[in-house]
Image (cartoon, rainbow, N blue to C red; front, side, top):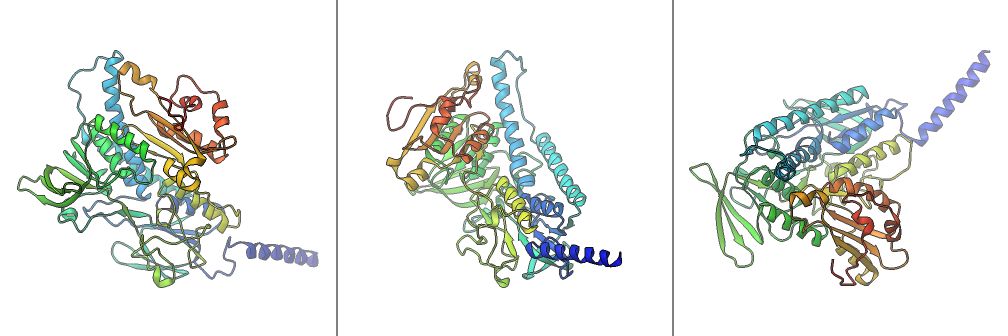
Length: 511
């Protein structure tokens, strides 16, 4: 019996050892404190850590929020939860409700005038929801037995991580694998006098207790336009200062429709403008001086708030990455990664906004983090597919897209090898409300030959994110224009317009 037991035990140990050679699921030697340490408690880092723990890994997460230049700070969850997607979408919803109140009168609702918006009420409600998400993330980490360390992480060597808390106390832990997921923070144009002293960024806007008042948004990225859109929507005088083009990287024809709608909606635009200085007046207002890039003339105006939305910088400077051999892109400061998210150091990985060439989008960071955790635990070999990732810009007229812009399709395939179908349409809900639908537009970019595989899809209109999400599945499956036309639409919806699209740009036929 003893011999049988020993034989069975030996067989079991061999199987365990064999599995251990295939994957780093658990440190059988006890050489490291953790199987995995994640530096960064944003969407990607949290997703990776929770997935790894669920698959049997011993995991720790280090997360510490450095207060913004204005002193704003927040809890666990990263940019998306605290100062990005979530508060942005809620404030966008507040603005949409303002438009709905105006529409409601045409639909028979008797609404006493004047209708006004209270920033403090909205801000408090949004912040309360964000704080509930912060707490929820902490509970989830605890439930999955992930060790949460509220510390700023940096690398000592490829397996050793130093954590420093708010009081400067240091703790050192070791890990078989390390994932960097620290994301990015807004940039300030430090060459512009007064920019840093008197401006704010998106890190501050959502946590303001009082209304920002008359606001200048410098920059026309999706962050800048989204913020300007909801500020206009709740009744604030808002100007967007644009150096060159809006929504760089997006389809430029559609981008122009977005800004055209915003101008009609009430947002002011100062095009070809380069900020020169920001000064604080005795009244407390901010006087902004800028130069017209075309005429070279100087202009001035006063604002209550100047919001800088001129890009984001990766949080890599304090991680000690170069010293341990992790290669960075010299131009962007981002971490250079392979297809499997691996850096130049074999056991160190990077996901999310900090990784060079990756879309700066929450869902891609989450998906990449989960897939990485599964690979590290030996449960999968699947890599993240970064092609055809859908996204939506939550401007007053929403813009959803997936796949290639028309410009990018031309660059890759040649103009003669693509076919572009397009149409303007009028949402039914705009009719009774007598709203202008001149910028509600759809574009489908296809290969010119064969069944015309769809390369990109673009949509402006109500609920653009909901519409685009469904068609994104089609792009992942390689659907064609023929299949799109064979699809029966749901009536009456905006999405059905895509199934009816039949006019090509090449034809020159009127829309």
